Image: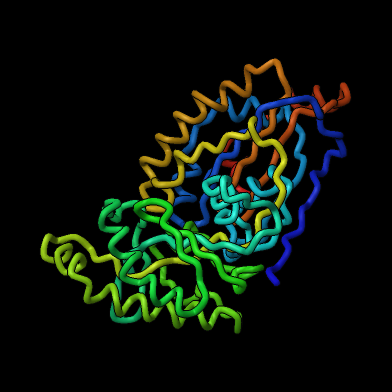
Length: 332
């Protein structure tokens, strides 16, 4: 079974305010790359610097940058009330339940997985997964690919369902608790350290090799290469597991404007996106008369801050606390 990540409580001892409130989750708020940390040191985020001293640290999720599930996925899963199993957060089952509700799917139905179409660049020493968002695939092409590989899946007892142009859904018993790396962990990186190594994943890896062979000679991929487009030559399996009951997350907002600049190492754009985030959603939290929750997520941890009752001494301490944005973001 996948590793269950511990939740570490905040150190202030304040009880959270349980009234209805807005919860903002910010993925890639901090960076561990040397260039990213240099960009982080130059951030000026006045609204964030005013907001955080007014909140209480509720908990910290995550461990390091090598977990299969990045901190922002853990933060969202925690907000849903899911079990925090590293690499086995059931995003696929959630989508399957939503999209096939007329079929009567309920919590406890067979486990699902997301298969995202990707281009893997084969280099001299490693195989690198390029940005899936940049892979231009239309619906007709995607449907042609899924029909070409469907016999491979069905011969091994997999159910295969088209979801959208870049993603398919699959169901099979082996997906129950199968720990796989999030796409955000593998983006632009060597795939070898992130491939599932459980014995139960051997069938999946063999199937992936067979799919690669079929796609390699597919006429649509030949046409893509002739047009200078990268071929769709594999899939990445992620989001495995059975559906879990979720809490009402209507008030949870995930603002992922920092994601693309961070993953593509465009730190000038990342700084600009952070400035816009600070002037927009962060400023709205600062001005809110209602309780608020803010989850700042880096590559190592996600820290969640909440409105909470505080003593007079704590309020006075917050007023005089002079901590810059880079200092707040450094632990992420």
